[in-house]
Each structure stands twice: as C-alpha cells, then as structure tokens.
Length: 438
Ligand code: ACO
Image 1 (cartoon, rainbow, N blue to C red):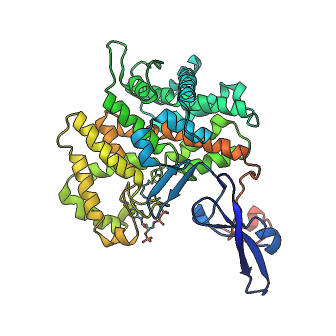
Image 2: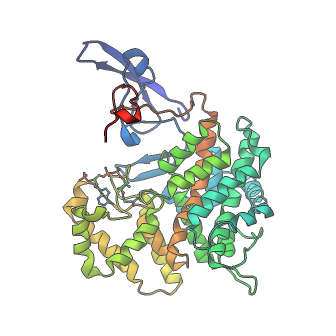
Image 3: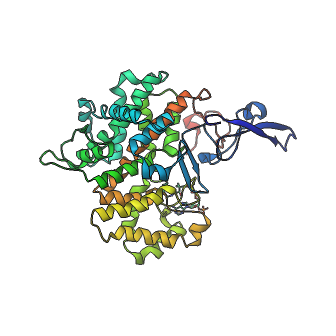
C-alpha cells in the first residue's frame, strides 16, 4: 500500500440549484483522512472549489512525511521524529528522506563522502557576497546566493534525468551550510572559512561559522550534536508553505536551484520559518515575568496584530512533537555551556505555562511549535537572531529536494495553476481620459 492510494468509496455531491447529483471517488492513503478526488469537478459541474490557504486541499500524493496534528505525531518515511532525533544523525535522515529507506553502513559512508565532496562553492560565488551591504539580512543573502547557483551548475539542470536531479540535490544539501556560514561571516566582516572534510555535517557548519584563521577552534561535541538534532527536527514537514512553494516553482520545470531559492523566500516570513527569530524578539520585548499578563492581554485582543510567536500551527492541534525534543535539548545545551539561569528560557517556560492554562489558547488548541524553544538554544550557541531562519533553511533543504524529486517523478504532476473566485469589476468599455471626470 506504501506509495499507492486506493479508491475507498464515493461521495455524491448534489447541486441544490439544478437538482443534479454527481459521484466523486474517495481515495484513501496509508494513514490520515481520506480525500475526495475532485479532479473532474470542473469538467462535470462547471464549478471550482474555494479553499484559501489550502486548509482542506491535498495538493499532491506523497510518501515522505506524515503528520497527525491531533495526536502530535510526526513521521519521516514512517519513523517517529523522536526516535530519529535520539538515535539517528542528520546525514542518515537526509538519506532516508531522499531515498525512502535508512542506509546500510556502506550506503551511509558513501552518501556522507559524496555530500562532503560537494561542500565547497565555486570561488567566483564569493564575489556575489560583496554586492550585498554588510548589514543585509542573512536570509536576503541566502536567497540571492542560492538563486545564483543556477548560473553556475549547468550540468545538473535536466530535471527529467534522475542522475542530474540527484547531483543538483547533493549540491544543494552540501553547499547550503557553506553558503549560510559565508553569509554570517560576511555580516561580521570576518574572512570566509572553507569547509573541512574531516568534520561531520553539523560540526563542519559550526566550524565554518565560529573558526577564525588566527587560532585553532575545536567544536564542542555537545553543541555539534544539538545542531545535528535541530537539523533533523527541521528537515521536512510535508506540504508547508515553503515546500509547496518549491513544488509549485518546480511544476513549471524551473531550474532546481531557483526553486530552492523560492522556498527560502517563503520560509523567511514570520508566520513560517521566521518565527524562531520573532520568538526571541517577543521575549525581549516582554522583558520579565511580571509583563506576561499584559502581553497576553494584547495577544487576546489582537492589539497591534500581536501574536504569541512560537505558538499555534496549521496542522498541530496538540503539542508539536519537535517542541518536546527541543525543550529537552535546550536544557542540555545550557547545562553544557554552564548557563545556570537563562532569563529567556525562564520567561519562555513561564509564558508557556500561563498560556496553556488560558482558555483563549486552550479553546483554539494553540500549543508551542518547533520555534518556541529553538531560538533559545541557538542564541546560547552564539548565533545572532538574524541567523536563526538561515539554520532552518539548511535543514529544510533536504525536505525541499526530496519533495521536489518526488513531484517531478509523479506521473500525475501538472503545472500548479490554482483557480480563483473573481469578485472584481464586470466587463466594461474603455473610457477616454478626458471623459473620466475628476
Ligand atoms: N497567537 C495568538 N492567536 C493565535 C495564534 C498565536 N500564535 N495562532 C493562531 N491564533 C488564533 C487566531 O487569531 C485565530 O483566532 P480566531 O479564531 O479568534 O480568529 C485562531 O487562533 C486560529 O488561527 P488561524 O490563523 O486560523 O490558524 P492558521 O492555521 O491559519 O495559522 C499559524 C497557523 C500561521 C502558524 C499561526 O498559528 C501563527 O501565526 N502562529 C505564530 C507564528 C508561528 O509561530 N509560526 C511558526 C509555525 S511553525 C513553522 O512554520 C516552522
């Protein structure tokens, strides 16, 4: 049944105006709600469906990630996220998402080797950075530089050749940490640090961010493990805004690097990946425990569009399982760094405690999401808030390329082209400017 769907029944829709009825197939997947197959709806009824934000629309079939939002379950290729975060590592998870199965020891070694040997970027790419202001947001830089990769690698752009698609995917997974670390170094005014092939993926990234040419820097293994775990937790999340953006961009046959740049642009928004940055800004703005009630009053009355950042999710109506893992990681990292009292963590936990007892949040099923605790860990590790979403993008690149590959291989894939409910002006004739009145 994995990889297939079956027709489990039919649904009859009756147009109460004309009295006509039509049957539509109901499809069932491996898990999750059944879906009504409405592909023939327009042809048979002359009507579209109206679903802003795709809240009730499955845009594709997928075998990669499954979320049960009511139960707080997240599975990559069937494996629970908690098990992967505890027992696996990011390279293995990347292989799993790309190929569908956990690698054998030999496959894992080969995969890690192949990714490692793509980590350097074309030297010419370094000059792109100089076109940006030093104070540019690193997501703006990331978006521009990843888009620019499309001008460098012409041998991996035939999207119908599975080998070329995989080469483009490996390049993206391998180069993203290098490009992200370069964005950080550029912002600091420090020299770029080249990747080091003897280091593991997350360790290498931390080294490129925090090493300087004038002294030896050894990455703390506890921090490298925490970084790796953050990458695992953020690697994929089925058809979220940025992944859907990648699929939509890819549906026209666009260049793979350009599609990922589109995903980065979508991820940047504060309602999506930008929320981890927004959480820290919010905590700083609240300042102390005493101000929590007043802040929550503003949230609940929607004063100045105030939201409790890091809370709520389109799919999870339960605690986000990734937030559980990160809450635990947060304590481990702070202990390792000898940070006994982190006022922001203290404030975040108190905010969570109060919100989870408040009817506004309880009745709307608003729980902490992955971003609520990730920012506190990343700050403790030494990253500035502006880099948080960049770290998310490194991890999510794996999900984006896995989903992009799947969409290209899907025989039912079509160019994404939603319809609309038009509510503008009825047809009218052009009026010469002198006859338009004042
Ligand atoms: N704070 C206050 N109220 C909220 C919040 C929040 N964080 N999230 C949702 N609500 C309220 C809405 O105002 C709405 O209330 P109403 O019924 O009185 O109008 C109700 O809860 C339902 O919310 P929707 O906006 O319909 O939920 P939707 O699924 O469209 O939005 C989203 C989900 C965008 C994540 C939203 O919860 C949000 O903006 N949260 C804060 C930003 C955030 O943390 N984003 C990260 C998401 S995880 C990720 O992308 C990695």
